[in-house]
Length: 382
Image 1 (cartoon, helix red, strand yellow):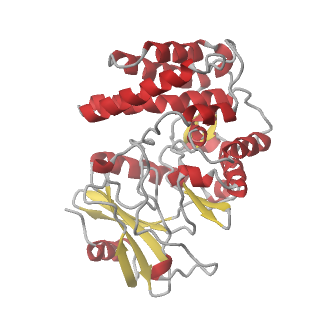
Image 2 (image 1 turned 180 degrees about the vertical axis):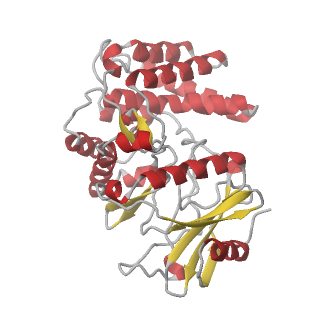
């Protein structure tokens, strides 16, 4: 049973000594969420988010997020042109823990809206580039994952093999993806600090610029293309500007990053297939198969534009958007619950299109005092 806002407010007072709650409201998209979550505002107008995991996977995600936030020290945060959540306190509850964070100012939007505005798109590209430009030594010090380019490649091959072993992966896609993983040039890149769970739900916007980024449980050293693949699936007419802004900020140091990002975007369908197979949900399997078949049709109509730069011309962002416009959108990172401010994640509501929480509201004032009707709006999609 989902915890009430009063229960969560009481937990917040236990987690944060001296907290005097003036207002609380549930932040929930449904009764089957991975987190019970509430917005709490104290007598001084300080806005906090409290979250309690409702499953083992949610608790694992929460623990990883806390490790990442501790690793993002004041020095690291000062290098970023946006805010990162601040841990405030925690308290034990029924074998798990309730964790309280500062509420960040900003609104959330779906990927199409984010990439439909030139100023916002450019800000997103620069924000991601700032993450990838962080010095990587702190990742190892914090005990967070570190992958070489070859390890990223091997993980991709393993994912493709597992999808092929289901018996549902079309041969045309298997050949396309194997060509990409066989191409040595595609995997000649310098690993960087990556967010690891980046999606539209991770981003908060204030005044047409990125004001905060949430959900740091995937923080690691790895392939920077992983943080860009969701942009290629967005249909906003300024999506290319985000990629350009990123490349300019990073000085074009990774010439094949768009091809790998496209590969990761396509592999989201393989992940969706594997999720359906592992959960023994035939409806998800059928949905994934239909999308994979749609991708095959699109690939066949773009035979001169494969993923591998060695076997043909490089696919432009416009080409990518055209291709994806002809296929349904896969569920985004269903196993990465990235949003720090998210309402309770509704696993039973996994769909192809992201859904917004109707209870979401606008965020913050410049003073930091947030009225009850100004709570930051967060999506509960995956």
